[in-house]
Image (cartoon, rainbow, N blue to C red):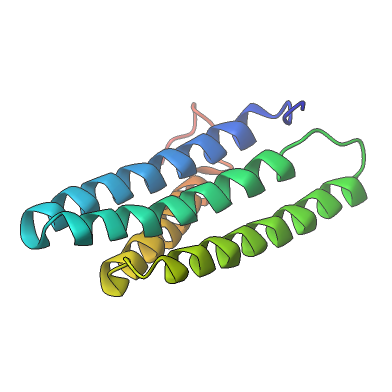
Amino acid sequence: MILTRDPDSRRVAVRILLLQASATIILAAACLGAWGPRHAASLLAGGAIGLAANAVMTAFALRDTRTAGGALARLVIGEFLKVGLTVALFVIAARTGKVAWPPFLVGYVATLLAFWAATMGSVQGLGKSKDNVS
């Protein structure tokens, strides 16, 4: 698999995944101290689902393509895989019967918020050259 040659796209993707992982770990550590290992593990599981689904989507969507149509197809298929994986992992988590749902959902939502925070930070930096910092 060859990822896109655009270093900015790869950099943003890595930043998003690292922010998602960091948010999950920090929240899980706080949850461990406040409510114990079951709740921390549930938060980690929710965050891991968001992170894994986004990693799959990123790996698929950033593969090199020669046309805009090909790039759009990869993005749509990648998003479909992301949603499918998320649903499948939520079902697996539910069937275990061991998940504490509030922290589980907090972990998952934290990855969504981290995605948007990293994306907004990247968008704000677009179009600014290193010489023209305002």
